[in-house]
Amino acid sequence: MSVPEIRDRRAERFAATKQEILDEAWRLARSEGLVSFAMRDLGVAVGMRAQSLYAYFPSKHAMYDAMFAEANVELLCRVQAVESTDPVAALRAHGRTFMQFCVEDPVRYQLMFQRTIPGFEPSAESYAVATAVLAVARAAVAACDIKSPRAFDAWTALTGGLAAQQNANEPGGGRWVRLLDDLVDMYVTYFSKPPVRRNT
Image (cartoon, rainbow, N blue to C red; front, side):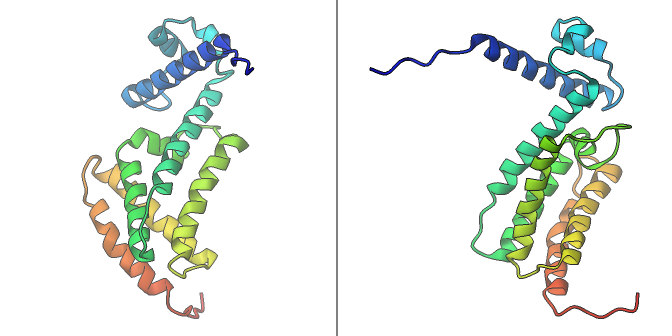
């Protein structure tokens, strides 16, 4: 006879409250700015004393770390869902997926890709998710028979640079996003050739 699994209701309540705090932190970051909201504002928003928040997040940086991890998990799910039998089409789709993710939420983009928060460094556990996102990108580039580290650096500069331009100069628009497919074609054409010797 099987024994019914005993639910840990206390742990479930703790996790639910932690997620509620995290969701409200995102809301405040988007309305007040990533570094502008105070823990007391967050406490008021969730009906809790500011000191009580530290039972869930020992510091504001710990909360940023949880936000960083959550955002990267979402990005990882999206890029892993990209499918195409043609490697170049898949690279374009990967680039579009990444770009869409970056431009749809500039505050999330700042947390993930810019050093907006003084002194914040993601934990090893959270950064491992970001590394997994990079691994998916690296595999998409390698599928186009482009495998040098230099070429991959160029890919991250290309996609990250377009996202930065879009968010900085035309938030919510598409001026730089629309360049992606053309630049992917240029990238593949250039880096799929034998390396060019340079004196620099």
